[in-house]
Image (cartoon, rainbow, N blue to C red):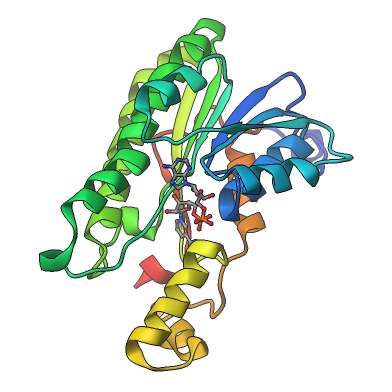
Length: 266
Ligand code: NAD
């Protein structure tokens, strides 16, 4: 048995992604922006993909002084062929882009359901498909899928989002099984409510719909099941993504890293 004195000294975790390329979708704002900045801070060359050109420009403008770089790429992920092409040659793929519509099933517009599934499930499939040949060729790759508590639990009125996230969980696990022999891991990160434009829009919509202040929607609706009584910050999610790209994670695959303030502990 190894004596405690023979163990390596504890050291600060230092993520070094110099020489790695990363593609982050939905990078113009919120969680995607935080992930792009975190990976670039660790030295990666980040391809920041989004349909929001202005948001990408703002991101690129705030990257001075980082160890790595951020290259904006305007792309609408509903163009699935272009999405697959864009993923070629990347070492790290962060599937993050997403959208939400809150509406009862019987009123849910079929075209919106289709778009949500396209952006949040089919595009990740095509991006993974585009990224794997390079990852397999070099025997290393990291796929991180930004899922949600809604990949594990349903909420009423979120049929498309919940369906897409549950599908993403399955896609991620399948990629983990197939990628293992090639040094490629695939995992989900599952946040509860994060302080991003997507959630700020939901807060405003629900406050208007119920005729109550936004603070009440936050505490009574969004944080109802959360033991930690605050929104999660985008940087906290980015840190989980960075960890999954780090040096000690080759056995960490096919799983879901839940950051939900205790929501799913119920
Ligand atoms: P956000 O709205 O701030 O950012 C989403 C980004 O995706 C935007 O920049 C948007 O332009 C981009 N996007 C949407 N459709 C696109 C398309 N067709 N092509 C290219 N880009 C497109 O949202 P966010 O809160 O940062 O969410 C990011 C991810 O995190 C999503 O997958 C979301 O489901 C997930 N998530 C968010 C929360 C939360 O509370 N905010 C919680 C759990 C999971």
